[in-house]
Image (cartoon, rainbow, N blue to C red; front, side, top):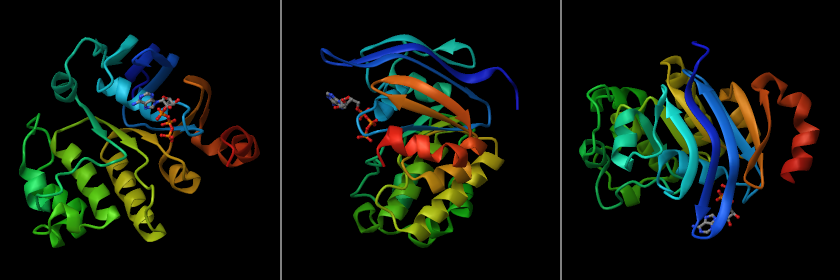
Length: 235
Ligand SMILES: Nc1ncnc2c1ncn2[C@@H]1O[C@H](COP(=O)(O)OP(=O)(O)OP(=O)(O)O)[C@@H](O)[C@H]1O
């Protein structure tokens, strides 16, 4: 693992209209790391992902991927540079089947996973390859959303609450997929409320409050900090 950050965010401010939501967010992720953002509802976790990706355009600050500033780039260039975003609402094409979802553009890089590799990583998607998006379970939709981003050749995946609303056995399966992606060197920025899940995959945690990063600690400290986190997160 190299020590220079692959993704570096400095002094990131972001606004929805006139509403100033992020206040000088700093964040570093090294290549191959999985970093999890924690924070109460409304703390700014989703906004941080949207601002890094460039879906939320009203931003100031520095967002560098391998030293290249992404702030002025249009969304498709950000994707080409290697960032992939899996939104909480998953963003798959409901009227298309699994196989169509996987073969539809945009495929932004030749280094993206082939459909065969995707089916090896997600055997259940292979079994469901002819099923329409609307017919998939929540877990299958989540896996398809992740798979679509892997097809683009993203090197850093921004993943917003992938386990929300899913049964424990499916959460476990998604955890296994993230562990496998980590093994393959993928860099992951995760928003997650499920501690047990996050603990399995996170190398480091950041804690957000009111649009600011207020703390950061290594994954192995999670258990020791549980009381403090319950208090800050109100869970
Ligand atoms: N589209 C929007 N327009 C205006 N304000 C928004 C919008 N989306 C979020 N906000 C506000 O921005 C702040 C941060 O919200 P954000 O969704 O980033 O929080 P979060 O930490 O991801 O919480 P949650 O877990 O509830 O999604 C909140 O005060 C929220 O009300």
